Length: 321
Image (cartoon, rainbow, N blue to C red; front, side, top):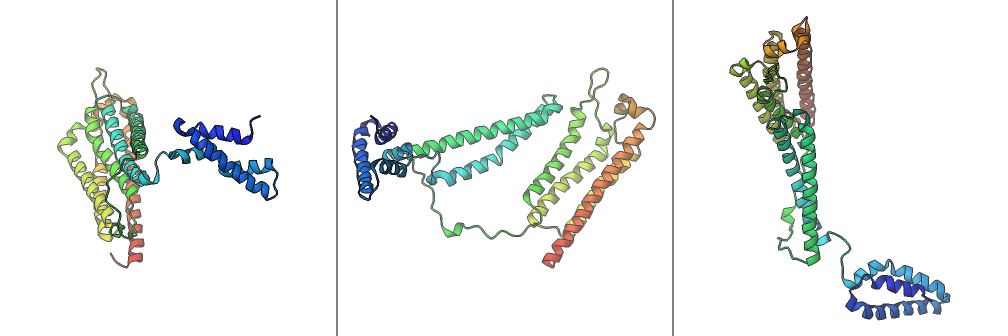
């Protein structure tokens, strides 16, 4: 009859190299018997002693890994921190870049603006999965082959400085930069890759093409200045009154011409207005213009008030400008 010890030995030996099984079986059986004898000598019955000894030894495969000097973790402590660092750096840059490129290609060359966002997200996700798989596989191979990594040792000079208190954080700056870049990209995209077509199948630009020789370059320059402001804001780390003034000037430099173009019916392409009856007939164009003005004014006012409030809080905390 097979005892618990026999079953435990069989389960353990299955997970060790065949050439060492006889040696390990003899050593482990003797160790188990000695531990059982010690407990029996202390007054326990043999069945209870055997069960407690085997429970104390733990899972057979974990014990076999100790005998075989086999790691039970995919990435061990010797390589884990480097694996984490490499993976974090790759995942925070490459998938996003791939997603943006695929989305732009789909919206322009692929003539699929409706599916551009989905294609970009899908490409970014697939890229992230591939990066995670191949980086992890590479480090797992290094772990299993005991490949030494001749990396410089850590020393106290590598300690980072104490983080400065910031009002303007990187995610907020990234969101603002992406918004400005998308707005800049929209200007040429709506002209060359508009989804609106006339009866002959030709694309109809959304904005009046005549604006390319007047206001659109001005608005694009204001947006580029806004990008510079976002970078300066992030490097400064907080709102200051000079930044509030520059931000207000840029907001007004963009909003005022836009509102004026809307009120004078010069923003939209006349061919676009003729293409849609709800814009052409009645007061459709006027309603669309008034809604646009309200939205632009609300966004501009919100941005101005928010910047002033944040500058006041920052000045009250730091006691400066």
